[in-house]
Image 1: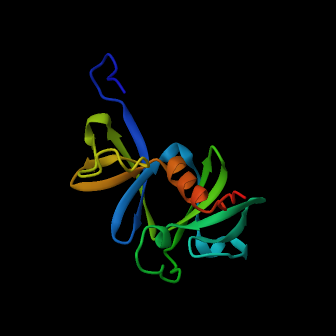
Image 2: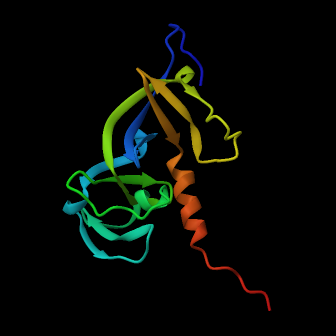
Length: 159
């Protein structure tokens, strides 16, 4: 991204959320709405990471428990602070369970640096955003959700 003619850097908005004590950010433009987990009508559950299917405003969507996906330990039971970020992705609508939502943070391009040690090997990580003493791990949520979906695909059997 380039600076505009006034010399002010373009700002990129991220929704910040916490998982396991770390703060993450995702493109705010992908966020459809925020809900408390208890407020969703859940009617199915099938796994550790896919924690079920829910209905929000008449739309049926899978609920991905990012607390289980990003953690070595099992996810804790939901608390009153457990949030669901409802995302509108290229592949459809999906709910993402997180420990909590912190707010919206704007970063200038120069405030985003590569993740130390990642060397571009983790395609869903955009970088590390630094602002006012905070560090957020910035994720490309479309790529991250496609990784989990691809992992669930059955293997082809060659006869």
